[in-house]
Image (cartoon, rainbow, N blue to C red; front, side, top):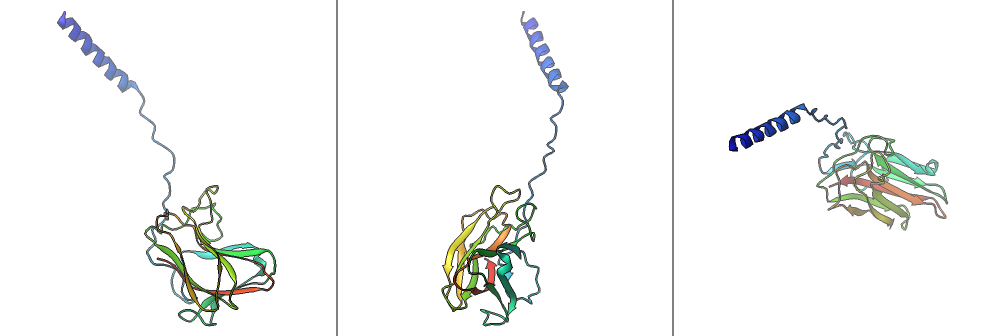
Length: 207
C-alpha cells in the first residue's frame, strides 16, 4: 500500500513538472525604460558673463505672454554685479504680462525629453536689481506640470519680489525637492504697470 501511494506521489510530481515545462515563457517587456536626465555638476552656472566660454545647461528661449514688448541685452555693461556684463531686461507695455523661461531643450514646453538632474543642490541663487527700485518681478523654476509628456520633477517660486536699485542676492531653497529632472531651470515673469519695467540679472546658478 505504501509503495502504491509513493508511486502516485511520484507520478503527481512528474505531471506537475511536465505541465510547468509546457507553459510558454513569460514575454519580455517591450516598454521602453524611463529615460534619466544627465547628472549636473554643481555649482551649475546659467549666467556669469555673456562672453563666458561654456555650454549653458539651459537656454532663455521660452518667451511668454506679450513677449514682443520684451527687450533683452545679455551683454549689458551698466554696473554688473560681477565681471564685465549682466543681463538687462525691459518690459515696455503698461498692461498684460511677459516672461522668459530658461529651457532644456530650447523652445520645448514639455513635449521632448531633456532637463538636468540637479540632485544635491541646496538652492537656486541669482543677483538682481531694478533700474528705479520697487520693480515687481516673479522668479521661479519648474513650470512644466504633470499634464506634459516630459514634466519638471519639482517646482519652486519666490513669488513677486520688490527689487531695489542696489544689487541683492536672492535664492529659492530646494532642499527636500525631487530634482532628478529639471527642464525649466530659471523663470522670470512681470506684469505691466504704469511705466515700462527695467531690471537686471547676474550670476544665476544652482548650488
